[in-house]
Length: 187
Length: 187
DNA sequence: CCAACCATGTAATAAGTTACATGATTCA
DNA sequence: TGAATCATGTAACTTATTACATGGTTGG
Image 1: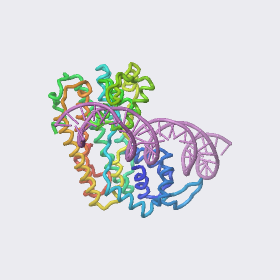
Image 2: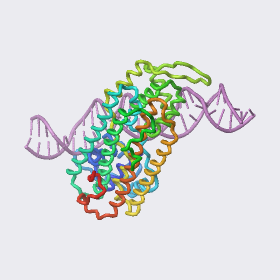
Image 3: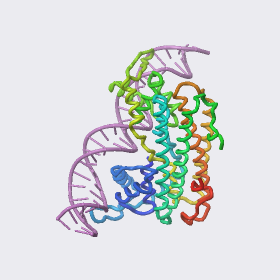
Image 4: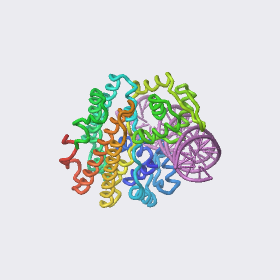
């Protein structure tokens, strides 16, 4: 139930409306936790009912500003310190790799090439983001910097892997014995 | 709707029952696409209704063996060659990083330390898997080898990142200027 | 004979997506 | 005055999780 904690986390930095939160989900959290508008509004209502946030002000156009409560902060803290993050168990790109054998070799190579490109452009987009974000806001953007570095390393790793995997397809399919010099084993 | 394609992909290698497929989801696809038993049985029924698989045989204990049909193979192929994989947009571990500022520094450091440990033990588990899997089965395990290498590189990257991020917490919070020598920028 | 394993399914609930519906305010 | 933006919500549907329910077969 991490959407709940994502909302609490954002509100722990500053109060915000559903609309404000959506913008945060689309910018700062875009690569980390996706949420739709209907999810956010729904979750805010549930959080308010549970007493973890309150409507602290109402503005023009029916705007409702939400504040995190002490109970909300306690729940955020409990989540961060007492629960383990769920491991990622779904990766569509990688799922496809399992079934590349059903394609012609040239098609499989094309897929891995496209993967490398996607990773490279993801990397470039993060570099761009790095230059454009105004660092120095709150703690959130300070830690966001750490997440961005993760993204940079991740996309770099993905590209390298995809290029390596592409070369494996060309190499003789002799099984595990063929450890590439470039393999993770070398680290 | 990748569960559907995961099932088709597995059946493209060999026919299987729902029970057999579940074992495959728990072993080969464990780190790549998680599915529950009720999802698998439900999906098989839907696939059969759609004509993408057929019940090719019935065995003891009500066992139903499923075969992929030509329409099923066509759909698998369409998915692999004509659609783009969905990017991962949810990463709970990384979401938590954004909110580490709400914790005491020692707690934040503990979190990143635990992340490094989790990555390291994931890496070790994959190394173990690498030694125990009998390579040389079908195309599926050949490509599974590629996915395993991805896992090895990924967990290595995660551990390195978590250790780096831990050091960042100790370093002065001067903002973006403090590029670590270890940063992705050095590559 | 009984434990382990094989084997399939349903029900209830939760989480996530897509589309729709509505309207106020600001500013050029 | 009209476009862009602010702002909230609901409905229908799909996907995923958890728990339950049932029973057959095999092998020590």
